[in-house]
Image (cartoon, rainbow, N blue to C red; front, side):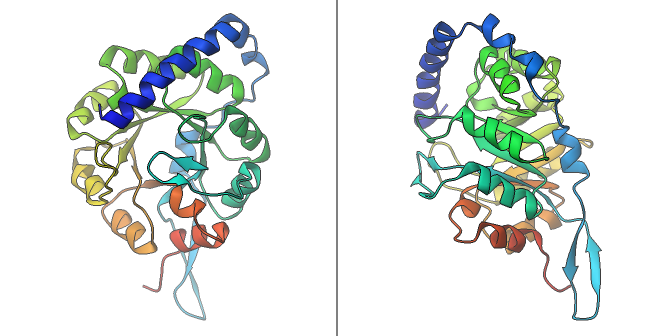
Length: 278
C-alpha cells in the first residue's frame, strides 16, 4: 500500500469508528427499507444507448461507443481543488443529458471534499445508476451506501486483504448492489478474478508516484476473462485516448478530473463520446 493510500485508510478507520458511535449500524439498517430500488449498474454499462457519429454532412452512422462513468469530484489529494463552482446535482444532470451510462460520486470528505449527502442528492436527481466512490473498508460503509441510495460501491483491492475483500463484495451483493473492484498492481488482478468480480477497474494512476499511464489498462486487457466488464480509470483526457482504449477492446471508462476541469462539462462529455469521421 502506498504512503498516500496508507494515510487515507488510517484516517478512514477513525472516521468509521466515529460514525459507528454516532449512529450504530442497527440504527442505520433501519433506513434500508426506505432506500430507493437498486438500479442495475452492470447492465447500464452493457446496454448504454447507442449514440451517433457524423461521418459526413449527409448521413449518420449508428455506433456503440465505449461506455462512460462520469464522476462528480470536487477535489483530490494530488490535484487539490478541481472545481470551485461545485454543484453536484447540476453536474450529474449534465452528465446524464450528455450520454453518461452511470455516475460516480466521491463521498470521502477529508481528502476529496466529498460527502454522502452529495450521493443522496444525485441519486434523486438522475435516472441512471450511481456509484459510491470512497475507501470502503468496513461493512458499515456498505450499509451506509445502500441506505443513501447507491447502486454500486467501489472496492480497492490494494486496501483490502482477501478475506475483507471477499466479505465486502458478497455483503454488497446481499444488499443488491454491484461492486466495482479496482486494482493498480498487476499482482492483484488474479485475486480479483478469483473473486468472480463482474466489474473490474484498472486504475492507470500509480498510487505511489501519482503518475498516470494509459497503457497500463492496455497491458492488462488480455488478462481480463470473458464476461467481465473492464473499466479503465484515470488519465483519460481526449477523444484520442478514448479511441485507443476502444480499439483495444476496453468496453468502459471512468472519467472525473477531465470533465470537472472543463468550462463546458456537457460539451467535453460529447467530445469524449463522439467518434470522428471514419
